[in-house]
Structure formats: C-alpha cells, structure tokens
Length: 204
Ligand SMILES: Cc1cc2nc3c(=O)[nH]c(=O)nc-3n(C[C@H](O)[C@H](O)[C@H](O)COP(=O)(O)O)c2cc1C
Image 1 (cartoon, rainbow, N blue to C red):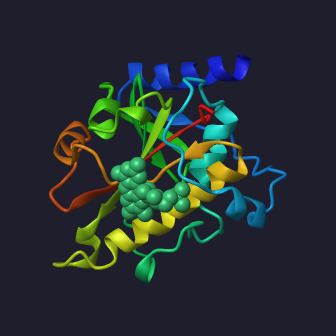
Image 2: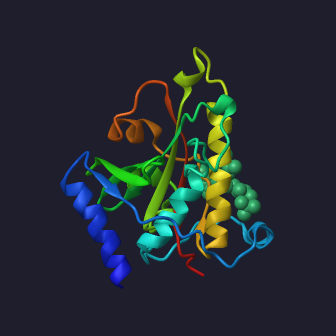
C-alpha cells in the first residue's frame, strides 16, 4: 500500500509540475523467474484488474524496455547502428510521462488521460492501470523509416518478457487512435507511434 501511494505521489508530483524530472528508484532487477520460464509463460493478456503497479515494479519494467545496461550508455534493447531512436511513454489515468533511460527518470508530457485513445475500439484492455507507448523516431535514419519499427519490436518483446517474469500481463497492440496519441504527446511528423502495451494484473 505504501509503495502504491508512493507511485501515485510520484506521478501526481510530476504531473503537477510539467516538464519536471521525477527520479525513479534504481531497478533492483530481482525476479526469481528464469528467462526460459518467462518465455514459457509469455502470452497475450487482454483483460486486467485495476490493481496499480508498485513503484519498484514500474522501475524494473521501464528499465527492461530501453534502460541503460552499460557504462557507455547503451541499452538493454538493441537499435540499428545504435541510433537509440526508440522512446517509451507511460500513460496512466493521471497523465503521461516520458521515460528518460539515462537518468532513469520520468518527465511529465501531458496531464491528459490518453488511455482511451490507446484503447481505441478494444475496450477489454481499458482497465489496465498503465499503458507503455513505444515511439520510434524515423528521422534518425534519414529520409526513409530505416529500422525504426523493427527496433521498436525488440522493445515490445522486452516488455512481454519482463511482464511475464514479474507475474504481470501485457499484449503488444497496434490497434489505437494514432493521430490522437500523436497530438496528445506533441510528437513530430517522423515520430512513429508503433505499439502500445497495457500492463497490469491479469483478470483471470
Ligand atoms: C505487431 C503486433 C501487433 C498486435 N496488435 C494487437 C492488437 O492491436 N490487439 C490485440 O489484441 N493483440 C494484438 N497483437 C497480439 C497478437 O494478436 C498475439 O500475439 C497473437 O494472437 C498470438 O497470441 P499470443 O501473443 O498469446 O501468443 C499484436 C501482436 C503484434 C506482434
């Protein structure tokens, strides 16, 4: 309960002060599940309870997306030519934050609840306490999209496996109102909203 309140406090604190960086606790990276158990358990979950994630869970989950795992600033997910063009946003009922991998922190970018735009027509996922949104900046590859969407796929798979390892459910989703999400997050023309992941406790 204390941890849940801390998470709510962190997000509310950030959301009250737009653009302020809110530090996350260091990821403890402690799960008893092995990689092969996580692979065995991974499956798409599309129905969630409203139970919130703890701050520690959010910290580990975000680190598993594009967190820094080496001193030179490279990340847990590979990117073509190390362009590091993939960003991850966390959308909650209170607003949306951008994850900053280098400082392992969150920056509030919107006070809107953008989860309806992320849910789109697929109402069964609407209950998830958080959605992770994977955005890839194609401009880092010049004129074409390069590997922007492919690189986003590695991040999506990391989310699937980290969620499975932590006993949480998720599903990679292409279905959403992309234009509404793009507008709410104030994204540039070449920033592609590739996938979103509702994450929470499976309702089963
Ligand atoms: C790129 C991509 C987009 C997807 N989009 C959706 C989606 O919008 N909604 C959904 O319910 N599932 C979506 N899925 C999940 C697939 O439907 C699911 O992975 C597939 O049915 C196999 O089931 P499993 O994940 O349980 O193995 C998507 C999967 C991928 C890889």
